[in-house]
Image 1 (cartoon, rainbow, N blue to C red):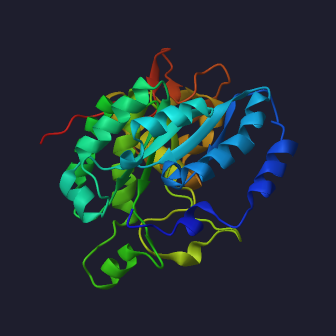
Image 2 (image 1 turned 180 degrees about the vertical axis):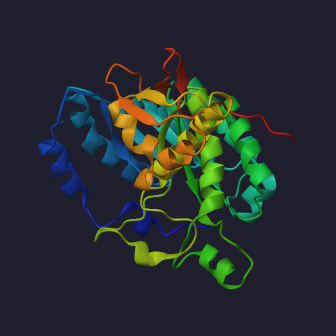
Image 3 (image 1 turned 135 degrees about the horizontal axis):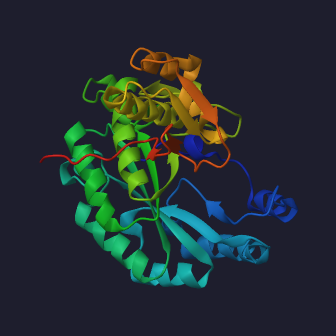
Length: 326
């Protein structure tokens, strides 16, 4: 987006030999499946020889136990047929596409250089070549209303992604977006708006069983956090946790409105943090609704991201997705 500050967002400075050495010495903590990923940039826009050199270095490591293949990120207008064929032959398994929006006006004002039609075409061809498709969506883009973002969320389901990343737009130093912000042409979302919009998208994708691999943007460089490079925007150090926790608060509050006598909920232990909320604020909110004393009981047999009531009914912690009007 706007030639974003890529070293800040994805890191820089490590040589190919450096990451090759790290891969050589890396072993998973436990038995699991994983991919070797080139993140954050437009990998397929690199010169073909550079792509080939990187992939050749990585390919031997894909033979390790548990390694599924290679993952790259790129743009919808950088995946012609010959490139997709080359990537497939070179061991790439997953392609994450920077979709951002499916609103042509938003794409134009964000300087993306392509239309929504290009996104649909790219995703179709990526699937036809047998890649795992991931997409990245953003709210708070220039010219993007809340309704526009919600339409993009619902329209993106027809792209048939298997993975999705959701993030609010942040204004970083030394980017064209910073200049627009400084001139007053662009106004960043506040945190509440960003949490609500990302929460809406989270609920839609979760209920369609699409893997949500990240919520929010990690700001880091080779020296660490890098938050001093943030000019404006809804950054939160635990953005995903906050989104999930608020969805849980809304879901159980809605349930209690209809069943105020219910005060005992079973959850998976790993969901405890998002259920009770920071400072136990969720439990405090629910206690004002329920007639009894609110009790949250961890139970390892309970499926993740669900809660069970005293009558034995299971419900999603994130509620049902909503439709929108045009």
